[in-house]
Image 1: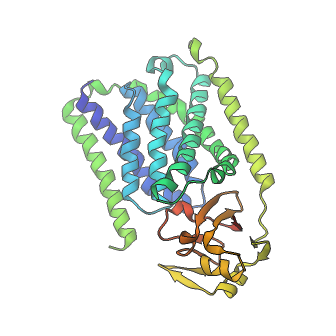
Image 2: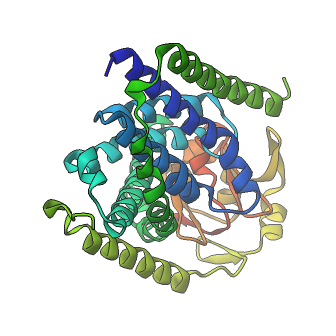
Image 3: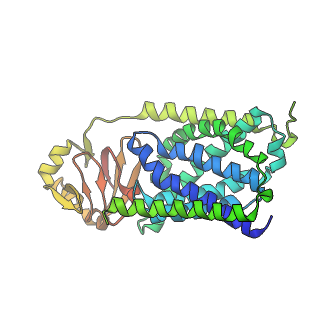
Length: 217
Length: 133
């Protein structure tokens, strides 16, 4: 696959993920729903798994996390933007680690039970480790001190809140893995690039506009 | 019939373990939950209204509440400037801050902390205790 297609794919899927974190997540939160677990189990895992089986290139999901995290950092509304940005970037890295031994062909040959299991393990790992990483790094980046005792006593809560992400990941997996039928290499450049860049630009524009509207600028 | 890749055979077992950990942690967290609606500071229980009476009300940005530094002095913490303060929420979430950070923080009537200079991760909700260390 051409590098240009890959980088545009990173931008597209990362922007979609970031858009969901900045615009949809606060809506879910306001509705009293556990937005973090829903976003990780459905959107983050779904987009990372789908892009992995479509593009079949390890490392792409790390890039997506960086793009989505950067977008979240630009949008200081709907909860802790610094913690969320760190968590999103960590989620991309954790996905890469968990999927080190998983090839696209492996996923293709899996029965439904295995796909759902991989979804459960990946979503839970991504959510819990992302949460732990942000608890360590947020105090460091916000120039307040990190105290291990603060993290240790909260670990049961983190492990508990990941349950929903795990279940949603298990349900999302078969759908996300079905994206492998789509062959991005066969898509004409004149359609792929304008569509990907256009959708990405739209996501960024809505997020920036949304931030400015909320700020009353 | 689809083939099960050999090296992935352990995946359903791992998924079951993950679900069990999540369920176990959920049971533990709910059993350990303890929120009386009051706040324990320096060995004494206070209602949110009492905190505002003791330390007065101040506004930081658009958020109003009792100043945390004034509150610690008012409740009789010895040598308050040289201590660490851990704000503990009903769900177990906690954050430790220094006196300098307490000096620019408040606790609201809804028992939430607010520090304009720190990340929102320091906005602890449903505070049940401020531990002085």
